[in-house]
Length: 67
Image 1: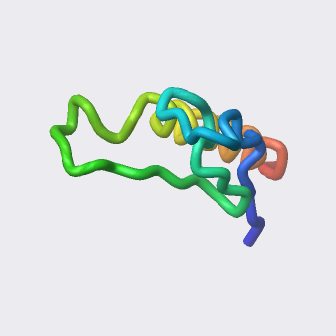
Image 2: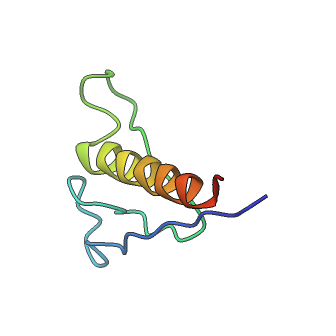
């Protein structure tokens, strides 16, 4: 098994703005937070973008190790 950590730094260390990448500040993997709201509102766009970028990172590393 190969552990793939989060490559994106927290882009909002003081305020936790919802529209930035890795707003929760995870370094072990991907994290998102859903508020008690409808699916069109939550999780916030920054969390969705974080998950997308993390998926890209996993794909790139998987490709690098495949032979």
